[in-house]
Length: 103
Length: 415
Image (cartoon, rainbow over all chains, first blue to last red; front, side, top):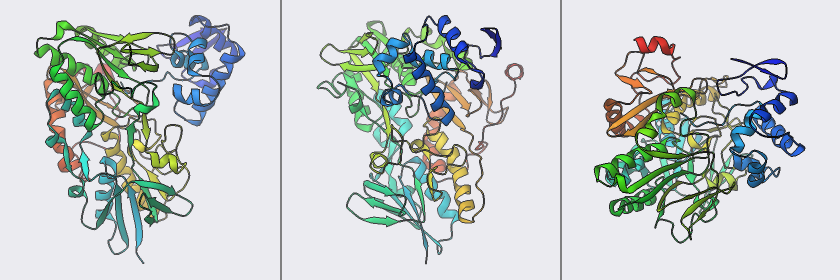
């Protein structure tokens, strides 16, 4: 399905996650963040988002632990930056798929 | 001189690979060795049933050697180090094994020490696990005497092996307590770091009602900072707390410690592996299978089974100097206990989420993503399939290594 984000028609899935991470830009990130009740996005948010996009491009699995270990942010800070669901919200804002289980 | 194929790990993956390749590699050209720390082979899916007394230990334990074919040597030992540059594996006693081709099938394990407070004085008193034989045994005794209170089933961190097992455990616990007339004295809560018990759209739509129907409470997006054993509660990084009388946790899973000692894994000791060929990304003579890989597939026996068929072909291609098949598609196929003598069957891959339909083929007797008694009997029967066909690398009738493309769900419903 399509969604209008800052004047662009973007492909998203039924939960609002971008289906193609290359359609992402910072304006889109700000718009999704606003919808999620987060932001405005600061440099600290953007560091996490860039890291997520990098890992996703490499095909590396995203875990809260790997983010904590990356030295970017502690898990506590991650909850402070993205309250309510750090991985699912940061992934949505970063334009990458939601972390899921097998069902 | 004969060449040497070395297989690290004699669990599901290692045993299947030994059987596949011993049949296919000429004995006068290839010697084969399997190394595992244990002389006992554990049917891991059975750990889900042991705490409820549905299976006994004798149902789920066999001698590892009984499944290693003639013409392959079994060595019982811990693995100290893998040195890929020199094609050498050092065992814990110092013995060195030189290989021409290495298959790493060292699996993964639970690591309760990774979470603060988990291994405190109440570990296996009221903080339990069921992914180990000792843990499942201790939990069986605990459940047999449990009379009521707050039962919390918890997943600490993804990825975990058999990712649906904690949810299945919750469903089976509901039935277990109900049958004992204790259910109204018990609250049952499922705590997950993910955004729901079901995270994929079709499964979520189809199955979310199961929790409500069974009166199971759900706590999501919960990453445990610590287990507070003094006050019997789980504490989340964001300050939320979940109190318990009985905690059944699934600790963080990690790859084998030998992977860490050899510096060939990621943060969780999983080995970077090509997701379609199963070749190591570092060394073409090294292949990785099962829970030891970093693949974005489920850590499950069915995945290992499908991988083993592709990997056996690829090792022969590699020996012949031919290009490998980029064949493995993340195919997974699992029975999921939903309680009350029923189960679901799911079939999915990297590309396709679990969907509705029939199995095997498109007309088989089993229904996908739907509760049925037949699926439950299928799950119980699978133990025999495991011991008699799967471990021996025999084909499972009607089950293909790659995922069959689902037909449109609308059509499926009408069929």
